[in-house]
Image 1 (cartoon, protein in one colour):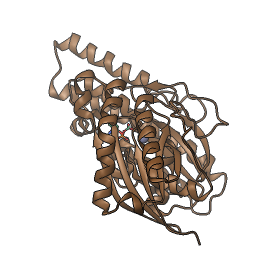
Image 2 (cartoon, helix red, strand yellow):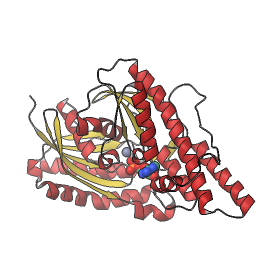
Image 3 (tube, helix red, strand yellow):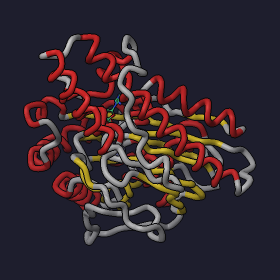
Image 4 (cartoon, protein in one colour):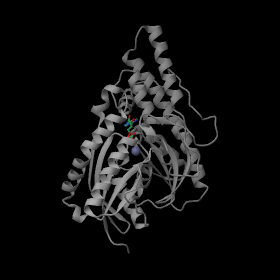
Length: 364
Ligand code: KG4
Ligand code: ZN
């Protein structure tokens, strides 16, 4: 039996400055504290995350977030066994700020340091929250990521496919922007679509005609832009109902695409005859009611369990980094002061590089 570990996790790869403490004891994990400071207000005037602003805000806030996580857990550095930090992929300035902070703490307190892949943090969350058994299928759907992974072990992932351009959350945000709705756009578009008619404006279902699990959302967003312009040209403006109908049409297209690609990914995963078939989701778009319902249906049809961790552990956070760092540490992973920040870092080095690179940084 391995000795219990207390891990300090640090996350700053996009627009959330986060620190957390996690206790790992055997195969049980407990989140002792998790602090997340978002930067939405800082980027609100720019229509997306500005990397330089994000990096500066991380550098200013990281030590405060760490101190807050320590205080909430009632611990000091003397109680910590390992420092884990996101070392990529992400916006390089932010990742660098986190890595520097973690190196400082590790060197100052004489603690081991483990660099963690942000995507591995998301992908291992179902083990942190629900002790999911390997192998399971993971769908990451956020403003920065979109990929299907078979998670076989803490450092063993196969990527089945992913977006070739925008991430779905990015598309939700852009659609909200072009309809004059506030950011973040996902919840706004979801809300508006509940009173919309999805059949009035029919949008494309990109890449469904192509075999495999790759996805594309950029053309869908452009189709919404064109439809908006033709409604405006015809009627001189957009009514509330027009907006709702555009949102509903877009929402339906996203659900159809995600459902069909998930069906295909599940079929590939089920070929391996997993003992307890499971598909888990992570990322902000997993908060979307119709998306969740569609994925749940697909899972049920394939005879697999569907798992969506609580939203605060689904979206960017440092508890997932602490957990992944602790598990990797147990497997012998160690980093030193040469640990580098990586803008790109594919989880599955064997699969071809993804083409997309959106507002929230590289989609490794
Ligand atoms: O995982 P997350 O907090 O951050 C990263 O992207 O890394 O995800 C944020 C994204 C945003 O694009 C936001 O619009 C989207 O998730 N989102 C939603 C919903 N809630 C958040 N998209 C669709 N429906 C929602 N209810
Ligand atoms: Zn993320």
